Image 1: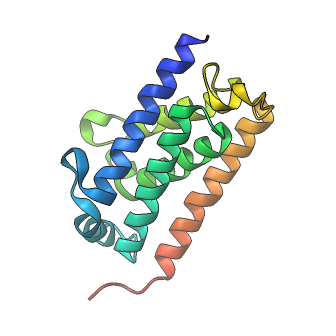
Image 2: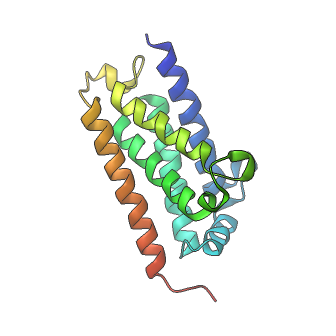
Image 3: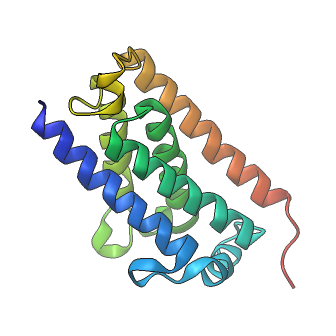
Length: 165
């Protein structure tokens, strides 16, 4: 058993599930899909509702995968894409520190997810039970590249969408 990785997966994954369901369902004090969509519109992620649905689904899915230790590199790429998008759209202008609304926490989440992609989720996990070889530096790098591509895609798609009335 690897308790450190289990604790890391449970914390990061669990909070990602919570954050995603805040967007999708309004759980845990969240605003739900319509209000989140309006916020996304206001920060240039248009159409807001579609982007809120995508972000909520990515966060919920990534969190579930991390918690279970399943397809860990896929989960890491989803975490990376959503956190890079959040940094670009909401946090970058505030500088690094979370106390000022900055991106420090987002970077820590990306680092944690990519570290798990490199070292693997440990046991108990679905990946370790399947004897998955999906871990190591190449998998972490692939997760980073796919996360960058996902964030770039969200940025390009939002820029191409017409502004809301």
